[in-house]
Length: 154
Image (cartoon, rainbow, N blue to C red):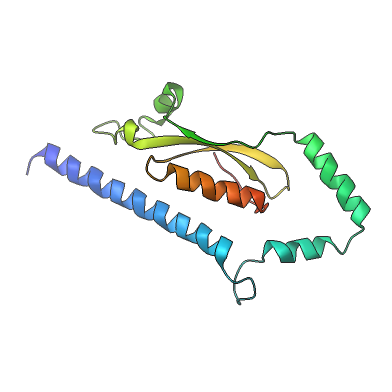
């Protein structure tokens, strides 16, 4: 077996692993969104979190909510496109192998808005398989609409 064919097999294996990881991540997000909130062991539902917040004075909540929106005036963005050249250059040799890399044409660059644990909106970016990009964008849009907190997107 030549070096080139070994590299191809390794790259195919890497791609398979990446696809499996993405699938598991999407499956986890799906489970969080559509699981039974009363089921033992599940993460607290958004409704439970809201009920906890409702125990405080409503006027204070409204004022702080408005203030956070003003302090963090980010326009929600949920888009995908081909990967810009400056991002490609940063990826090569780090998240993208230098020898026989996965084709950039098979990947998409996502720009997403999300709520952080600090209850503010943030912008993040992500690289995913082009075939999955529309679905991933839709999932993150739904998470944003439900104000589901996410620690960080790079």
